[in-house]
Length: 187
Image (cartoon, rainbow, N blue to C red; front, side, top):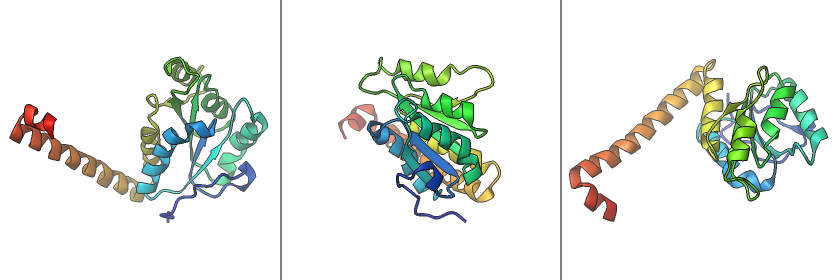
C-alpha cells in the first residue's frame, strides 16, 4: 500500500504526488531540521512530499497548496518555520487538514521563542498541533500516528518502532546499572 521509497522532490503544488503526508518549510535553511520528519517517515515506510513554501516570500504558492492539498489526497501537513513562523498557522487557516507545526530556531530567531509562540498561540478555530523547538522527528511520528488511527498497517509499524526505541533504552540502563555511572561516563 505504501511505497517504501518516499517522494522527496520539490514539486509545484499542482504537481504534488498522492502522498498522504506533506512536509513544507519556509526556507531551505530549515531542511536540516525538517529532514528529521522525512527520515522517520521513510523509516516507517510512509510516502511524503517535501517542499519549500514561504508564507512571506511565496504567499500565492502557499494559498494554492493549502487550499488544494486535501483534494490531492494529503491527509496531514507538517509545516516548519523559523522567526515569525507564520507558515503553519496560515496553512491551517486555509486547509481542512490537520497541521503539525515545527518551530525552528533560525539565525534571526529570538532563541526560538518567536517561532514557538507564533505557532503555538493560534486563535480558537485555527488549531495547529505544535511540537517542541526543532522537533521535526516528533512531527513525523505524530503524522504517522494520525494516519495510524485508521490504518492497522501503519499502527503496527508504530508499535514496532516504539518497541525498538524501548529496547535501545533498555540496553543503556542495563549497562549503566551493571558498571555504574562513573565508568559509563568514560565510555
